[in-house]
Image (cartoon, rainbow, N blue to C red; front, side, top):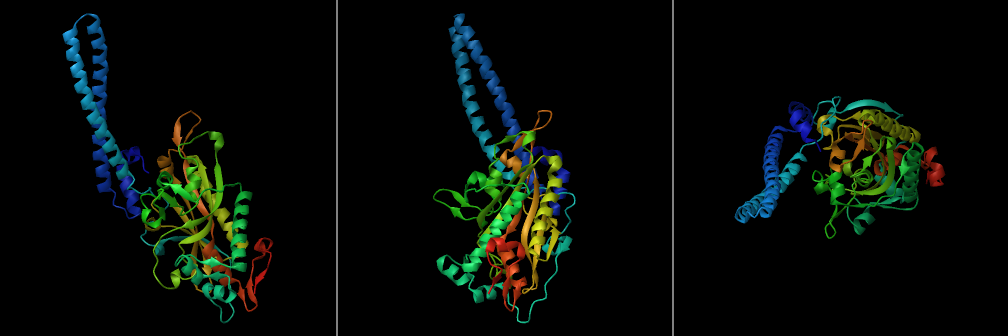
Length: 423
């Protein structure tokens, strides 16, 4: 959430930067300024009335002590009228404050200065790439056909049990899932991230704190009876651990990681782009989250990008890293790098990770602060990234490592899978 100081004090810059995201900010800012002016006016009048009440209350005591009963009764009547007016103003203040907050959260985060202009994914910038695209054997299959042939992922059974987008993993497919989760978590822990096992249901305050609400309300599964949300990513519970927390400088950096299943109601079209594991409503993901002092957050972001890249190198998958243009960025992000792996049988790139710096956008919502060296309260910066999301990693592994003898398991994973080939 942008601060009122940003919105009012840097209006021209806010409008210019949000235009990079394709967001026309002027009408919203006009409303914010109008509501903020009204809030200030009500607060000023209320403060004045309370001061008058306090002064009158003191005078009443003195009048009664001096036997000036009629004057005291008149003063009491005035105080009573002031209290009624104060109640009206307090209610008006609550209403305008709620409306102001509801309006401020309509503004996305400002993209960082290095975010390229652009409206669509085609305008993202390739930062670097690595790995070698494999030459597949004749008759190579896409992962959904490989999964059926080897009986390792059952999409039809998932439809029977739940619906499309909820696959069932079997045998070596389930073992591969478990191996990847363990591998990712252990790599993150070795890089200094503390492993957390959070709940996968969160309350409304948690979803609001990291920006899923109100922006992505339609994409989240909602348990209405208890007003709880299934997590779309472990970012939500991990970051909310620090909601309403004041950190000491010695607490930085905060580095945590977690595996969770993730749930997203995102609608998809039909065809190969969403077939098989390409897009699911439930999927497994390992997440990394960092909380940093503002001066350190972009160095930390570079470190997170390098860490995720090292995992893809270890898996032997061809990859590329993109800096997202403004129009392809999330509502909450200031700068995002996407990782894609090449799916050889499908002949296309598949997104497997986003690593983002949110600067103070989430921490302003979360009231996540720290005391600087001078003892002043400051907002921290939050960052997170997928390290990694499993479905498309599995798709790329199945397709890129297929041979006439079976699907080869990358050497780095064999101590986790306990087998080296899916025959």
